[in-house]
Length: 322
Image 1: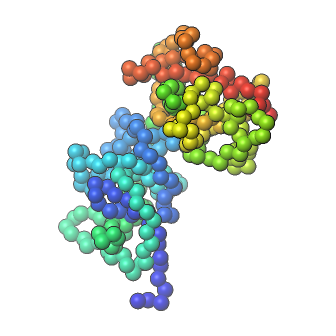
Image 2 (image 1 turned 90 degrees about the vertical axis):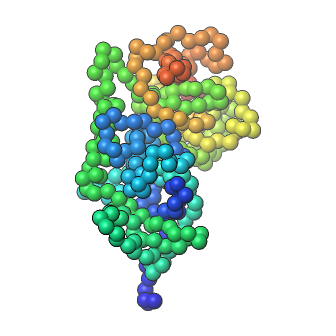
Image 3 (image 1 turned 135 degrees about the vertical axis):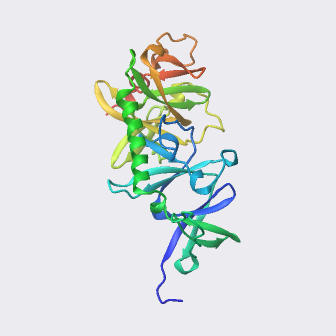
């Protein structure tokens, strides 16, 4: 045993009953796996793309390294958002895993090198150790991909972003990007350009004497933003099941001619979709349980009707004025 040892903390997780670990220094966040959007003509390195923190995040296909068949996928319940080093700057990618376990501490001396057999490339595995009476493979995130593969991932992500935001209007009609979310049983969507970021369970400070619909205020990087309980605006019954606040969507709105950002409490953010202007029906039912002025229209997407909200009307409250 040497006089100085290097200690490292790893997040342990399972993929198809196999144990793996990634260095906490490479881990930015853990999220639940949403529905993925396929990227046409993309590299086979990509499983798909999701919308995360107002950015498009590529999800890598880890089956390639594990030699798994398509039918052998597990639940893939979570995504680890990893930061990879690249010559043009760090790249964030998502890795789908079945189950996140816990943070495990390993001493450098407890990590054994992987035996090299044949021409198999196992450079991405830093080593193997013992955990829960099993072997755990510790992944060297920065060795997962070659520079060429990293460039391919970056190009696929950027190409999709370019297509999504600028070039997708090549047809006779213009297409907008919307972020879908749920409020009780209501399926709604907001213009993605209005969404600043999505927060998981932020600390909300109540404001004494304010309207009931104003849940309070939050501090975002030194900026104090009002938070509106959107469920009350849309007359959604708050029960024990949906009483707990899980998600706040920060959106840009115009209140009395002034630009501002507002937090909107929603049950969950579900997907990013593309809707053509010609597919939006401006006729809104008079039987809605909320003010029809809150909607800019309704669109049919994959046999489902999505209600598109008018953010400026929804957040037209005296209590959120500056």
